[in-house]
Image (cartoon, rainbow over all chains, first blue to last red; front, top):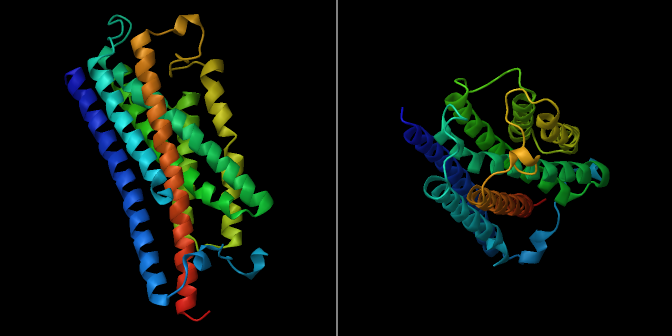
Length: 61
Length: 232
C-alpha cells in the first residue's frame, strides 16, 4: 500500500476513536446534568442540598 | 459556564489535533528517505509521542488521586483516580495503536516482545484497562476503592521506568528525539508541529479529566436524590 494512504487510514482510525470517546464523555455529562435538574425539580430540592458528598457506607467513617 | 469548562478544553484540544494532522501532512518536511524503511510513516510521530505524553499526565493524576484516597480518604482523590484511569487508558491505547502502525511500516512487525519500552508502556495501558473494567464490575465500596487505589498508586512506578528505559536500553524503540542529545535534534518545522500536538493532547486530557470528575460528582448527586426518593 502507498505510504500516505496507509498513514491516512491510521490517522482516520485514531481520530474516529478519539471522537467517539470524547462524544461519549460529553453526552454522558449532559445527560446526567439534565437528569439531575429534572430530579431536583420534581423533588423540589435545592441544588446545594444534593451537592454534598455522598457517604459510601457506614464503615467509610 | 463552570459545567462547560471541560467541554471548552475538549473542543480546543480536538481542534489542535486536527491542526497537528494538517501540519504533519502538508507543512512538515519529510525525513531523510535513506534513514527509514518507510519515511512517510514517520509522520505518525506527531500524534504518537504527544499521546504518550498525555498518558503520562493521566497516570500522574491517577497516582495523585489514588494517594489522596488511600491516605486521606479524600472524595476528590477518588474522582481523580477514576478520571486518570479513563484518560490514561484512552491516551495509552492511542500511543500503542499509533506505535503498532509505525512499527508495521518501519520494522515489518507491529510489536517486539523483547523491547522494554513497548512492553512497559503496554503494561501501563493494561493497568488502566484493569482499573476501568474492574471498577465497573464491582459495587462501589471502601474495599473495592482501596484495592483499585493500591493498584493505581503502586502501578505508577512503571511511569518513570517507561520514561527512562529508552535512555538506558535502546533495543528497537527509537531513543528520545526531543530533549535528547545533540544527535537527536530535529528541524524547526518538525519541532513546532510536535509542540502543537503536545499542547493539543494536553488540553484534550485536561478536558477529559475535568469532565470525568464532573460526571462522577453528578453520579453521586443522583445517588443522593435517589436516596431521597427511596425515603432513606
